[in-house]
Amino acid sequence: MSKNAVAMTAKILVKIIAVFIFMAILMIFRSTQVGRIIKITL
Image (cartoon, one colour):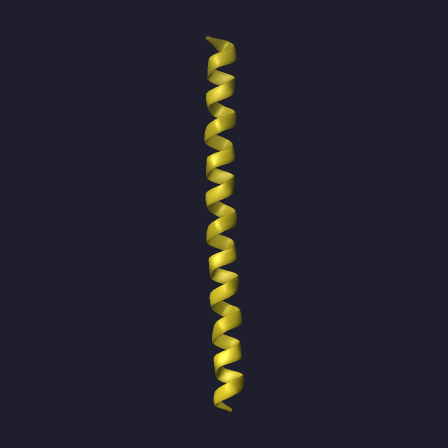
């Protein structure tokens, strides 16, 4: 039981961390793309 619980919590934590990293990468990509678009328009 304890091993299964630890495995489940570990999987959930990994998923949450992966989602946060993915969101951070998306935000950085969007900000850089927006910066490039602004530079092109200006």
